[in-house]
Length: 443
Image 1: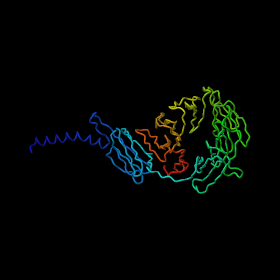
Image 2: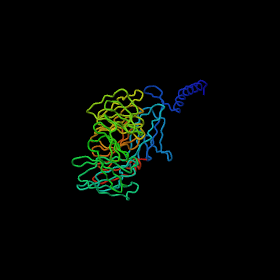
Image 3: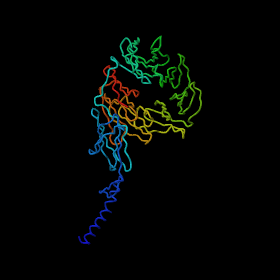
Image 4: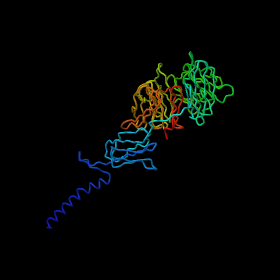
């Protein structure tokens, strides 16, 4: 081989070395060359974890993997910074599909995926049922059947449903509208409606005299009722009353809303001042000095959760700003809403009969999760999923609004009442006068 040829080959090799070496080095460091835009891009990754553990995880119909045996997680790196399709599969479960955006030098995490069984099994808990209520500690359940002559009650412990107490109360043509349990779950305040009036009763399964005792003074005009098992607070004609042992006392006049909190009363006066009282109605301090404008044709409600104080009306929502000592508009996207705080306090749900919105306190924005017809009974399943009824169908939805939102429908159809018990992870459903409960859904 001539010297010139050898030099030519050497020169070509040197040139190729300097051309490809940077690319190989950058590739090994997680960078890619975007030939279309002629620029270098850093890659990202996707981290996936589900409950129960998935059998197959597919990304872009190309990458096919399975979570580790001990970590129950799947991680893919060196993905181009763009949208990718994710599919999480497990036999017998609804598949989870999502359009995932990957960002340079970041890992997109989907670590709270809940897989729902396609054929969720249910067991019978009670027959001939018209109403039920889970206790505040979620360990007991009160079941009722209506008849023209009496009100049948059944009280049982969920861990031992065979050990139940049955009662028959001579209340004709009645139905239960609501049940408020004391924190210890040993006693409850029941709101009962008959043909012409609304009455309240104390349900006490341990009572030797009567299991259902009428509460004096409370009627259809009583609002904002608070019950802790020993005493009752309620509002009538803008006056807060205190009821204990059949004795009633007027505590605070000219009140629009109140909240019992840490043995104190947080009250919004009818002239728009936020005040703090002790439990016997003695004024402790003015929290605000500037009056909040109230309207006579609106009802108001105070909610305090995770050190945040909200003021609710049927068409607006306000959040108290302690620095400014005033309520600020929280800009509710819907009217006639119900507000539901996530168990961890990081998000809240606003729902009405047509829409469900999520508010993220971290991102400080609203996102619409669902639009439907006749939405009701919206509840938190855990910190990442909600359950609700829509047009006589039970639905479970994730709150992760990145890309598409995964929603599945569950049996049975046409439920009259649902309640999810976060203590045992089971769904309780009343349908066609049968009270049934599901197998465990959440972790």
